[in-house]
Length: 326
Image (cartoon, rainbow, N blue to C red):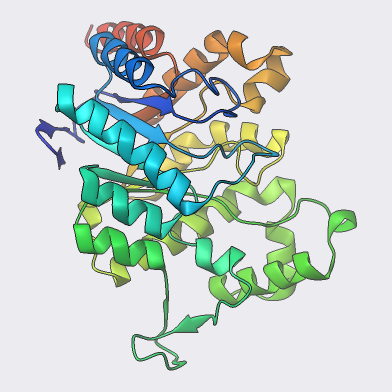
């Protein structure tokens, strides 16, 4: 896989590092630290020197309880960071957004990868006016495709896309209300399941099944829009629409996920609550736990890890590779 000026060998045991650059005031780990031009440039340089292969820029926090920003504000934040980095470095840049209009402007500004936390499925689960499953003539058919604004943008720019598993499924029957049941019914329709089967998929014990179905839907959407198979990167979505137990189950199932799909897999677990809950530590003290998930990803066959502390994770992977090559 070639991204910008760099060749990524998906058949080697190497694991590539996506360094996180949050230009937000409220991200859970580093909110407010990299907003000014000098701070953005300095952190990008530090990550590159430490071994980052890609810089992933986010302009809106997606932590629980985050404050949404307008599309225009997000565009200005991210495009400014892209321009700052592009002036000094030729490293591949990824943009972390679920908004098609934001992604459009950022790819136009010079970003190289689309990183979509909704896996091309935002319209399905969040747009109350979403009309459902249609073909390209906007007619309901048996041979349907799922309309996706993000997939249209990605296909137009012909860039790699990270499709992350995410949905609005609730976790316990007691928590469900009419709105949640609507989501479950939609999930059942999209997955060709009965409502009873969809409810079973929403239980904690069946999270891996739900992740498989969701990632397959994202793949199907990408292929329907003409996105090249080799440009699709799967992310199982640790920390998104999952309980603590579910997050641990997904991490444990990484080898299954890699084996199940003939696609590149990325893990983004850096400093997330699944680590904090296990270690009883705040976000800025979760690096040892993050390193464990990075090595789990390498062992499972993931090709990318998305992390905050590039230096420590690069060292851990270097040690892993030394042992692997022995």
